[in-house]
Length: 237
Image (cartoon, rainbow, N blue to C red):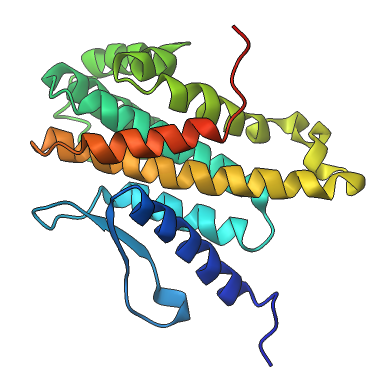
């Protein structure tokens, strides 16, 4: 007999929750058809293209974790999704040099992993590694993501979502309140914030990609930003 704690039903409930928020903010979002294990959220733009697949996959992973009781781990993926939304927003300006640096960072990381395993990457002989390393170092230097967030209008996403989610990546995360037996209510707060960050970051990524492709969705962007900011305490001025 199905119970209220059935993980599949809990996962579906969370996806409907995020879907309802996306519709409230004006996004064209649907649930894909399939069995319980093959239901996902799809956000489309006017021309019918889906949002970047990595964003959708990360959101899916965060929802799976959140609805199975791993709310802290879901917050880590939500933070990763926020990071992706910031980078997509930064890249949406269409500056070719930014794309080269973004790509170089991935190439350098892949090469480092390949060399650790005793292999050479497929692009070993065709890549200018001196230039790639310089670009990667610039992209990953301390404070670089905060700079990209500010330049792309994502400072609020960085301050509230990215930095908050970072707390759970550290080895001393055990000291956070959600791991204390008498602080179970705090986990509900973390869960709701994680779901909100997932929804906001998805639409932010969708908006950035649409902007890059020539579509403008300012109404959706402003509506979700206002709702997102309302969920977080405002800083004292």
